[in-house]
Length: 154
Image 1 (cartoon, rainbow, N blue to C red):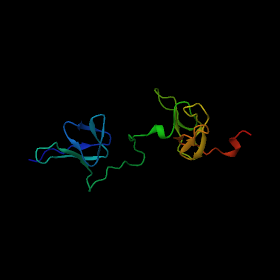
Image 2: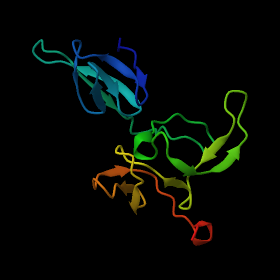
Image 3: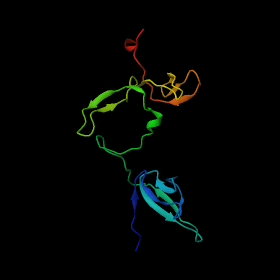
Image 4: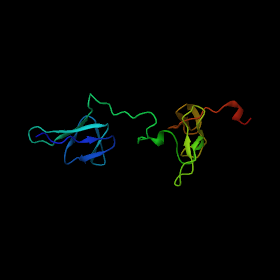
């Protein structure tokens, strides 16, 4: 009888590093092995060593969401915004009882318009995804808004 197949999703904790070593489709963090993709959990060991923990996608079926589906994803927010940034965003929904508004910055004209570096100096945009401190020349990731000329103060 074949062992039951265990499906896993990205970000799911699979086991600790004492129980196995990371293989393809996985990553490690804080002493644990996590799945980096959706698929089947595989464990293989040779010569009594710790099993190699891998996640393998099924070739027949793709786990892709339908248009309009609600999905969970991992966002690296530190590459877009920091506390204290002034952001130009569009309201897309009034939200529910727990959140006041649902906002988006998914247009070129939306994003960070004012940001300050760790030294407190106002940063200057150098690309659509980076700002730079004019004093220390330190670069930081931001989702920079392409502000239209009519909104700029002269």
